[in-house]
Image (cartoon, rainbow, N blue to C red; front, side, top):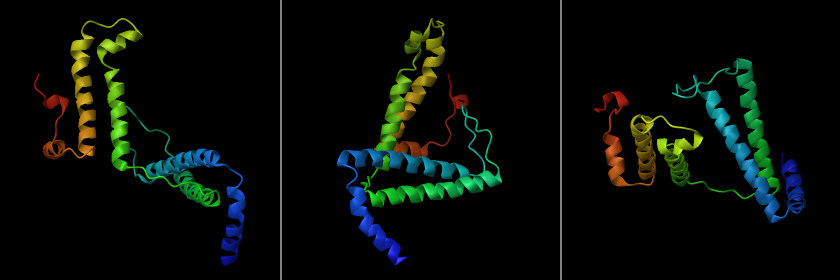
Amino acid sequence: MADVEENRAHEQPWKVRLLNESQRRSLATVARRVELAAWHLEERLLRETPPQLALTRFTDPPDSAQRTALLRLVQHVRQEVATLAVDYHLAVTQESFVRSTIGEFTLLWCDLEDSRPQKLQRYGALNPQADEVLGPPIQRLIELMLAMSDVTGGKQESIRLWQEVVHDTPEGREG
């Protein structure tokens, strides 16, 4: 084992010199995406059953043999990414859970703003009732996206408010 590590130590400078800094940064970006995709796949494979979502249905789950093979492949992918990172001195980056969550929900807020009924007119004539009927649920989703950002950003008032919310459903609303 020590021989393998010693050989790796001699190989590294040679491999590192194959790429300039920009090339290493590009390789690191792709390798990070591969690593995250493998992690996401592993998380999905380890779930007993897929989540019950309103707009997404997961079908065609892998059978037991496929699941086992995929989990092994995930481990190999992780090992290859780790080897690339070492061999080419790829920079490790830190991703702030808080900032990435805020960013994700901020982008969703922007997308929802573009889904307001008046914006949907760009896809064709809009039923006159659409604004009255569709507007409020879109507004609630927008408010929820902003609340996600506030809570993730540490706004204490929002944290306290959403810790206390038990179950707020459209059926439970008056209106």
